[in-house]
Image (cartoon, rainbow, N blue to C red; front, side, top):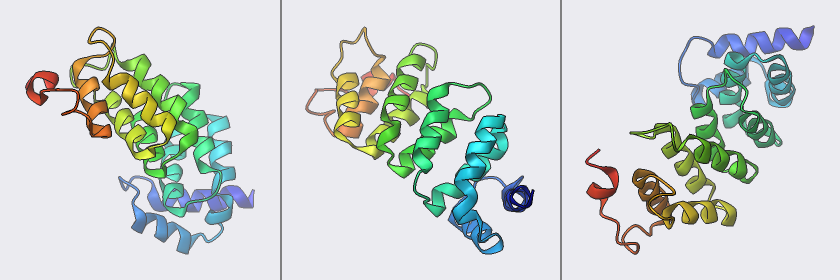
Length: 183
């Protein structure tokens, strides 16, 4: 019960206050010092209970506290495809963490959304950018597969963004205006 009260206190600091940046995470760490050692337990419990709004807020805090073991929890939630999760923020946080364990889940998300995320492909582009931030050989292989695919396999804007993340758009002869359709 005491642990729930600590979590409530930590969440109360960030709830309803928008983006959770370093300053707000530091505020939580000062007000609730136990957050550094308990936040992974809280995230697991919130995930198990499906309390996604609170999970997202405290994950935003955790990204700045850097507890060992955070990325696997977040990657697992992303891979689960459970409804109600703010997938875009989760993908962004996993990229910020440079979490190699998230590569497969992010790629699967991008692959699954490529046919329904257009014409701007906001979530897919965020996933491609996160793969670029992660930058592992596996992430770069996925990006190269997208960038060098046949035009029928991947939409041009996604091929462009993947090539841009790898810095090979000129090498592939891509024309930005043509690939992005004047976006």
